[in-house]
Amino acid sequence: MHLAKARAKNRNKEWQFKPKQTIISILNNPFIHLKIQVMGKISKLKALINATEADATKFYERGNSAAGTRLRKALQEIKVLAQEIRQDVTAKKKA
Image (cartoon, rainbow, N blue to C red; front, top):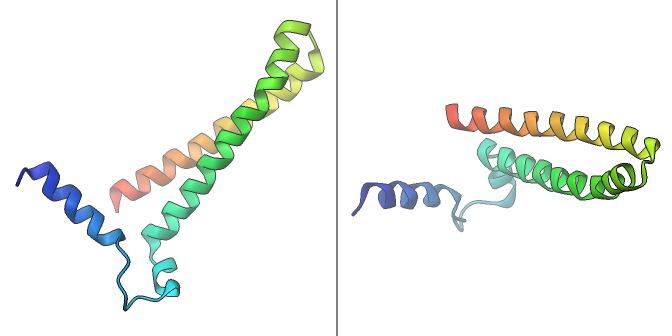
């Protein structure tokens, strides 16, 4: 078996549901907890990016300065959230 396929197969085994495990024990697994957190942050990141589109249009096409302020604020939030996701990924890689 190819080495990469063997690694992928082993990685997938840790995420498979085992009948003897309860939902509580699965959610107490730190890797699954981290995965849930990161996926929630990614969903929030997508929502923030989609929400900024309207303000970007108002600022660049109509010259609305208040929309520019909202856009800068949203971009700062995106930056902070992206940095948190990067830290979570690094923590998972080192674990």
